[in-house]
Image (cartoon, rainbow, N blue to C red; front, side, top):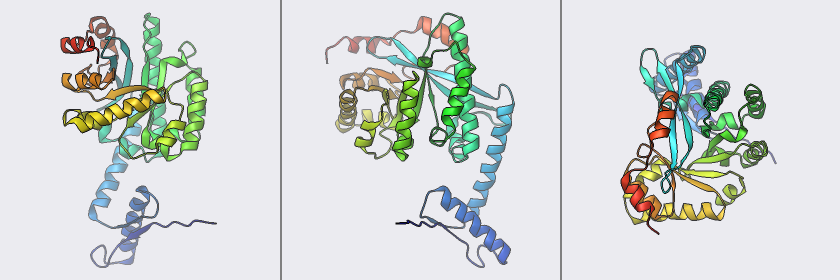
Length: 325
């Protein structure tokens, strides 16, 4: 059987145009936006569509220039720690865009625009991976070994050329262990194409690289599918973390995810921890690994060594970590 799908863009005379050329142009723009949102969708033209299209083109163009301009794109590193022992587990690489006009721009402001452009997201993702490997190499020359997690966009990860790009990158850093760089993929990306995700995760794991399932709990997903993916860890979505202080039900949800992680033999990281109280509740639920402002702020590479030397758990966490829950 052949399944046919259709996307429709609508422009109405005379509100959206008084001549055929304008109407067709606006209908085509609405069609483009409908396709961007997925299959079997329709969309009516609105003036804001043109504004969004112009902004998308501008951001993509400026980002391409940024990739060619040294120092405009940088990585900061946020610690991941064990709340019970105080051990530094590693760092997550976070992209920052030093825009020449707007100043520092965080990924939340542009990543959705980039993620729908396969060549650009692959190029940007390749830059981030290369930069992280370069930094790991520099730390190694100083006698320090840090594990770094890099989140890879779904379109980039599922791209047929990802593994080739991945292996090419490693050829430039022969002195770096593949276990020092971990790949993070979002839950939604992983379940979008389970077969391809399974193949890629297996290939990465066989090469010595761990894969972490990030933003867990942000979408409704199939636990059966997740059980098939040989990821080494799960990172709870930061929006779910924020609910920890809202009542017993949210703690029960986190406890359930912890139980599932233990059953699947997966590490579990609480992302976006912003308060001492969240850490205490997470430990009470049975967790230990966390990342967020309460555990450590993102910092440039130059600050990592000094921070690592002086880091100690807050007193309240040390007290509660010694209790037997």
